[in-house]
Image: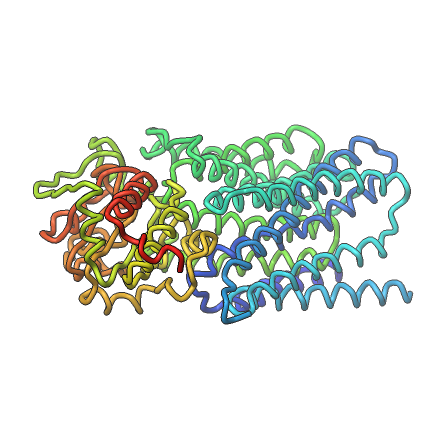
Length: 96
Length: 475
């Protein structure tokens, strides 16, 4: 049970950190911030990878794992790239 | 032992960088670097996990397949999608993240639940529930933004609450029964009722509130990821998911404030305007105007030709018509003619807060010409011509002067202070709020009816035929 309480502590502290990280956000950045945070939420790739590893020879589970990996990576890769594309446009002459 | 130390170290660095990434994304100067930092952190986390679990050949094969498919689709989507479609794409990405968490939980429940403890089983139930809502909710949000789905009438009656509560109860029953039979009927009851619930709660919400919904669903996908972290026993996943979940909640709140909406009324109030106009034909209905002046592109062009200072107010209609490039061209022409041009950006202009900045930046509008509301408002009295392009509620003077207006209290662009106002709009239909706009009846206001892009192109050709910009064409 100690691993559960440890996991719950991690959950609690992670949530508190998340609440504190964002204070004031200029409206200009709402869209990119949402899209960047969205990419990070694709971190569920870690769960997909673990699932594939645990699947062993179970083909059905391997397939489910690969599908979930694909969808999660779609979220991660697409999310980070599109956020970068948006933010690149905010750079104008002057701020190099 | 040393491997464990190494992977723990990598995980810690990854969490630190993710946190710094989220923080940096909330400041203009650091945002781009912060996004890249978060991407590096994500790569580190994956690397650390691969070192830790050492996948066998079979696992590598499936990892390669999933990576190639998802990664490639992500790259292509991110690079090819037009900037105007940004809200839909974020919703799509988000839905896929939710689906991934859902699949992991279902996979574990079906094939790996033997001997799983109560914690794992409860986590599976939560992960399925939140993952499914995130998935179907995001897909519905995307479809509504794309215009593939409208708001069915029954979703505006209280019937929807009955339907959604029934679905929630069904999901709860599935979740409670799940530990007894993880791979059986309760799992499917939970999957199906949660998926339908995602549709049921998103469908009634109007297009204007969609950004808030997407932001909230984004927060959910963090929660789903954290739950998946409990399922597979990954602390990194728990902490990152919790961070995104909490940060997403704050962002949702910030966006609600910027749009002068409360989160509760977004979630449970139905589509804004549908109730205010009940029986009046919804958002397309024409509110009763009596003193509308309309004019042609030619008259508008003549006013522009003589103006010294022009302010454009771009809004949702401009984004929909994809007219940002035409607008930039018109602005350039006027600048060559010696006119001082700027753009007034309301915090919620466009389809999401901050979206208009992205669209205009894409069309190469100089960043210095984009003026925020507090900067531009004092400038309106010395402005000759204001052109409102597909914006409505954000320029409604009632928000300042009429306490009975639903918009009262929302900060607006005070364009009614300018000498002459042209409102480019497709019809007299009401805005998101479904209320009429007093600006349209002001004596200095004239309506130019038409699609924003068509009107702008019309203005361009009128101005060119007057000889504007020709003299200095080589400059």
